[in-house]
Amino acid sequence: MAGTGLLALRTLPGPSWVRGSSPSVLSRLRNAAVVRPGFLSVAEEETLSRELDPELRRRRYEYDHWDAAIHGFRETEKSRWSEASRAILQRVQAAAFGPGQTLLSSVHVLDLEARGYIKPHVDSVKFCGATIAGLSLLSPSVMRLVHTQEPEEWLELLLEPGSLYILRGSARYDFSHEILRDEESFFGERRIPRGRRISVICRSLPEGMGPGESGQLPPAC
Ligand SMILES: O=C(O)CCC(=O)C(=O)O
Ligand SMILES: [Fe+2]
Ligand SMILES: [Mn+2]
Image 1 (cartoon, protein in one colour):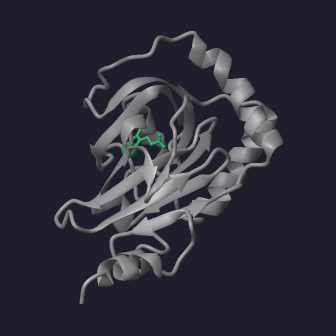
Image 2 (cartoon, rainbow, N blue to C red; image 1 turned 135 degrees about the horizontal axis):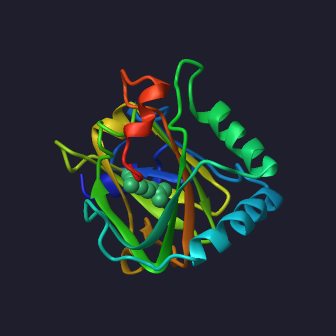
């Protein structure tokens, strides 16, 4: 029947910050790819960006990530935080990670310039465990997840400033993730203009690695 696909997409169940190629992929990943818009209060967003901005500004934007996945970025691995930021990171840990999961001791802070973007990749299993949780600051963006074996299966997450996203299990292992460049930054029909975006990313330790071994990890995962 003509138009059925479109009708199906329009009537997909689920929150308005997650879109998917089909109802089945949406329901399969319901707990594996999660967006919590407004996770941060405006004051918390300001706390984080005020703390991070001066540290990031000391660096230059780069155009070749070691695995060539990220363009137009600068980054830092941060392990010392103000008390106010530590409280925020503890909320992230409680919201995204299970009691049995240990986190990497340093948090990945990534600053993408307005024309910066992240190409599709799966975070290395050598350096990162089952769960990735990221806070977005400053600019909205669209994260696209595509199944590595069946590329017709995809999900798009609308990441507004102040939102938290969580990728775990199948969403983390079986799907690549990317942040769309400005020219391609649409959430369905809706244009999401990209500006500078800072993300604060917490990851669990690789499976089977004890906290004592995390010192051997490379600076960025
Ligand atoms: O900026 C983000 O939220 C994701 C970054 C990312 O995918 C990575 O560093 O592996
Ligand atoms: Fe990644
Ligand atoms: Mn990385």
